[in-house]
Image (cartoon, rainbow, N blue to C red; front, side, top):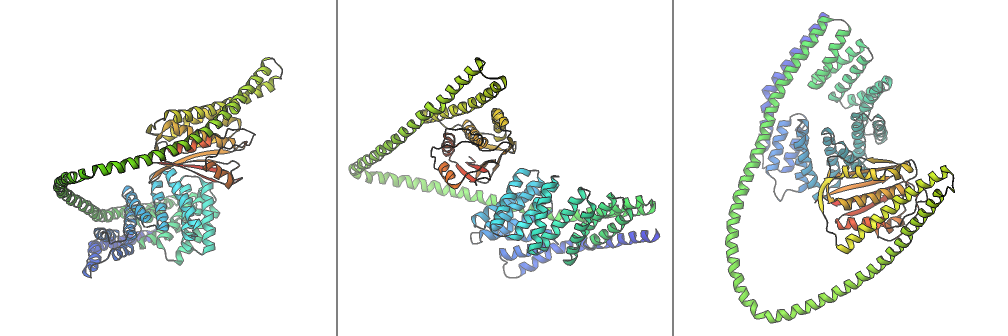
Length: 632
């Protein structure tokens, strides 16, 4: 016990000496590197970015100062991709310090510049970072959409290492969400791909997370193997931080198995590794394990010694973080002051510009008076020219009206066909069924089945009638668009109630994954008609026991709403007919019939929203109908 106490006290002395030395040179780290760079010929934005990149892990305050100097040099001659890199690096620094909102803001700025610069690879990398931050901000649905989009891009463009990184991110995403099956799926894919591509970083990250996953499942043997292999890879790259993290995780797992001696050995190794960096986070976790180990061994003196060490380390960490945060926040405030100064200069320039505009306006007014006097000479000529243009315009209008009349006649013929067949036949069929039931010509169980059939037929006829009336009202009265901003989630929930009977008959599951707080800008009645037709169509072509999932996300330029089913799908020719707005109909999975009018109406209403309908489908693999609507 005496040797262990001496060891703890010795570690405290060394740690305290190191922190004092760190505080003495701290300001030198911020000033000297930047002064050395500025003493040379005027640095470029690229050189400042590179300097910040080198210091991003060891001296974040100096790195932030470099990036502020880089941003101050932004002008029209600096490429947009270089500016985007500045924002990416700064967002990473903000993220390390826990400034999630500031990091998101810079990543969004970088994303806009990368899109402007047509750098799709870096843009998708940035989307992954945004998804990670949104996960921390509990915006999981939006984060998952971004992860899946980036995964598709990296797979299509054979960006293997980035694809592996996304697999690891998705594994961690589902692990934090306690969806262990999904986490296992992605982490195993990351592990297999890393081994195939000899990607050491992706492999050790996948192994570490698999170890955590197996530990949660109480599969301690598999967890130990994963941690051991990850530790070996970290040792090869001399990643002391990763080695300390693994040893802490192994020590906690040993405690969970009541292996006190083993836990102590692992925790002491973790503490030594963490102290050599130093990494206070792992020092604290290792110390916590050592305290518990000492208690399990019933060694009060050693327990108290480690408790004292923990308190001293916590105190030293707070002192260092206070010094560091003060310097970091000072640079952050300096950025805000510079932004305010730029805004003042802009306002001053705006005032001068307004004065100049007034002078120009008065001069222009005088010139207009002179021009009017000159133009009056040519009035008769202009009148003749105008009459000629008007005559040509009327001829064009007449031709357009003739074409519209031909379309209206074709539409009229189709409507008469729908009314005479698709509306009349169900009514005749209804009368026949009611006669059979009322006259007791069929058994009770058959009558019950006929009545259920009648209910389904009634819902289909009512839906068709609603579509016809809504379309006719819009065509004949020129129904104006009534845009409002409303909750899409609430709209879908009310629509699901209407479709409950139809869905229940086919044993189909409806899933509304839209964020309850998400708002869309549209005509609510029209959007209800659009979505009801798309969901009804999905029910029609989805076998019993299938699922239909509705999702949505507000992107930078539009709102994207998707209706995804596990139905029979469509071939390219069918998709082409739908997008070409052609009348056609096919029977559903249970021989359901339709008018072929619903999808054409959807196309028309989406077009009136200035939106777009997209279809992704393969025969036998289900369909995804996507609606893109402007944000406003």
